[in-house]
Length: 402
Ligand SMILES: *Cc1c(COP(=O)(O)O)cnc(C)c1O
Image (tube, rainbow, N blue to C red):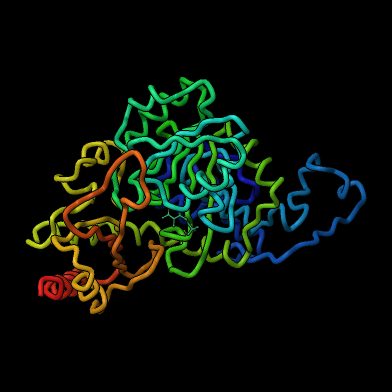
């Protein structure tokens, strides 16, 4: 599908074009901006109209594309168009953070009395929103086993409004059977949503796989430089108007400088993610062979239980994955982490630099257990030479064993 781009001077992006071409050309109209390659940053609240007729046109005049800063400018339209193209959606809504994209996506669809199904390995703040906010408004959340597959059908009730998926899920990286879940949802008249941050819409096409709404923390790989907060809700034809209406009611807005940085990051996301795919697999295989590592949760490894579905549905692997070390003594785990030279310790991921943190997945699940005999870790592989990263990990695991 070729989506209607807001600007007629823009390069026509054909459906037959490959992602790496779309990432470069979508959302750009240089000759509307004095030939500047990048869509400039528009800082605007007030937008002026030359005539009363245009001021009062309320969407009927095709020459009036910008009404008020809150409702978007060429800067935000450019990023929205590019993300819509990348995920084959009908439209995109930007949000000031990935978490806001999550909460807005829920708010667009739920009403008091509704029941929602949420995967048990979902991003922890998504769980907090369901437990501490939706519950106050009479919306019941039921968590389900991420590996449930077609079993999700049995959980759908009369009042089920939406099914929330995330694949691979946070911390434990189970791969969900998205085409099956999306199909069951559609047949039951239930909205299906995915948190597609891991693949960034580059390695997995959520909407083409039957999902209604794909949300992203564009904070991660899309912006890619660990300096921006940004979220996006990418909708199919059936859901776009609804999500747009509700987010407008909330006054949802993403700031122009951050939108610009996200778009700038997107332009190189293809090469970054391809390199990170390769580097990530190299490090994952090295970890898998290490005697102190009990398990590696990386769907591109043949040993991974999600490998077959990943291979069927994804075109590559992000460089964020998990592993379990053969040790739970927190002093030893601290010796491992505190001495790392190249790996930083911190929340978030998707930047150009490598990260390593301990995780405690069992604290954020309720219907499945995560109780391995070792410490679970989360690793993000950046753009460093993977051999240097492996040396750093080798030294770290030596400190762990001491
Ligand atoms: C980081 C993250 C988010 C939230 O994004 P922010 O921009 O940090 O609010 C949502 N989902 C997943 C899977 C994430 O990793």
